[in-house]
Image (cartoon, rainbow, N blue to C red; front, top):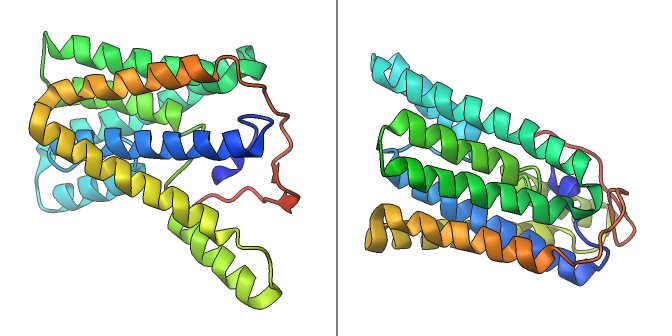
Length: 226
């Protein structure tokens, strides 16, 4: 999946870029929060989580099996849930999905008052990230950047690679902020992510919706799975 899914966010290209950047920062923040909280497991970078679980299992650490399965399962359910929400509210898809993300993260915060079990918290955080990743899949941004640099060198296309590099930088910034916030506030830093998702959902609630044509400024964007 590429950033093509994010291109129908709004009709205005400038607003769309702001939304994509904000989502990328938010995903990086929560992923870093989850990584520190869960001891090395990502709640958004599912390929990395699968590799981590595989390495642990290969080393005989069977205790991580439940956590890895909970994160992967939660992520998949989150994707499906966001798809249903998007189908129900087509023209308000972005704001509704962000509200869903905020609600799921808040649920994780509430659940933490009763249990700090990594399997439970990991599942809920992955639910939220699965939903948010339907707006912007960040896992292949560097691959997209490299491919667009190649396109630029061979075909003299416009500087589309800068867009993907920018979003990768936004994810990195979010991860730095998430790790920093966790160091200062521990689990309470999750509420920053809740507030950010709620604020973004409210701001975008009245944004003009775009169509579903997966093109950016005349660019044809094939669907890539990375």
